[in-house]
Image 1 (cartoon, rainbow, N blue to C red):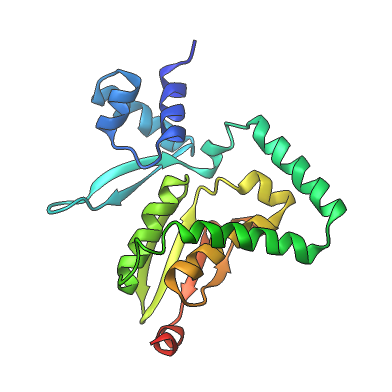
Image 2: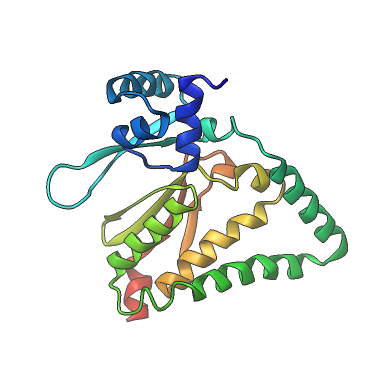
Length: 209
């Protein structure tokens, strides 16, 4: 039987960026108990929190699994995916493999093009944030010195990416295509950094106008 702690972790795996009340409903215990468990899980480095705006008023706290927390849920699909990619690399040249991941991103973009038509830069960044959060990332963005930065944490591709870093190109291509401008990756968890960070420079924005 799963402990309450394990139920909370599983609930966050299924639905990142949950509030305390949402978790209380998911695991069928009161919010005070959830808060207590979350405090301990954060001390253990398994859960992280961030502020999220939701309309008028103060931001609310939402909770997600940290990278350490995600790694508690190894699945058979990691092994299967890794084996499939190993087999592809043995049979196909690197250029074809790279194109394969680019095509994945470009096909995904087709689903979003109409939704982002006419969006401003910051509206597109909010759209990207929400889209990647649904895929299991913890995502935020900020504007600094006229440049924009997108921060990713809790990468669901981390296990696969350690052996097949090509998967990282999917997000970079996806972000670039939605923004309709080149996006530079300046930090990556696979290189030991704490976050994956993408930057959009002021110069690039001006050139795209």
